[in-house]
Amino acid sequence: MFIGEYNHNLDEKGRLAIPAKMRTLLKGGAVVTRGLDNCLFLYPKKQWNILAEKLAKLPISQAKARAFSRLMLAGAMDVEFDNQGRITLPEYLRQFAGLDKKTIVAGLYDRLEIWDEEKWNKYKTNSEKDSNDIAETMGALGV
Image (tube, rainbow, N blue to C red; front, side, top):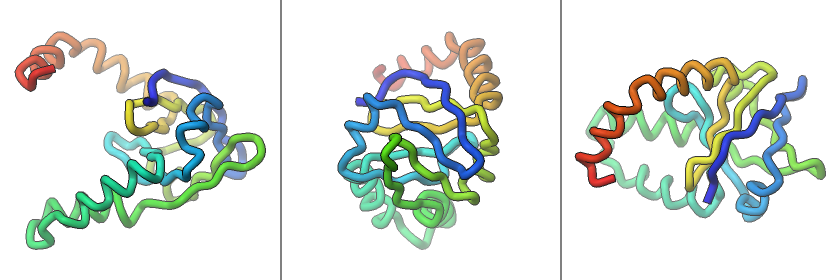
C-alpha cells in the first residue's frame, strides 16, 4: 500500500527519485501515465494490468469511454529504476503535468501520484477548505 507525501526534485534529464520504501512495491515493474487533475499516475505493473484490462472492456461506442481510455492508455509508458532509484519521465508526460523541478510524490493506496509542487499545494489547500463537504459526500458513498 502506498501512503504519504514526499518532496523530490526532478533533474534536468527528467529523472525523479522514488522514495525507497515505495520502490519495493514497484520492483515487479511500473507504468507511468497521464493522471487526473494534471498529475501523473505511477502504477505497479500488476495493478496497471488490472486497470488496463478494465479500460479495454469499455464500450468504444461511447465517446467518454474512448476519451478516458486514450488519456490513460495512449499516455502510458513502462519505466525502469536506475541504480539510484530514479525513473525517467518522458517529456510529453512532464509537459502534461507541468513538472519543472520541485515535485511531490503522493501515495494513494494502489498508485503514486506525481505532482508539480505548486499545483499540489494549491490542490491540497482547496481540498482542505472543502473537507467538510467532501466528507459528507464520501459518507453518502459508504466511506
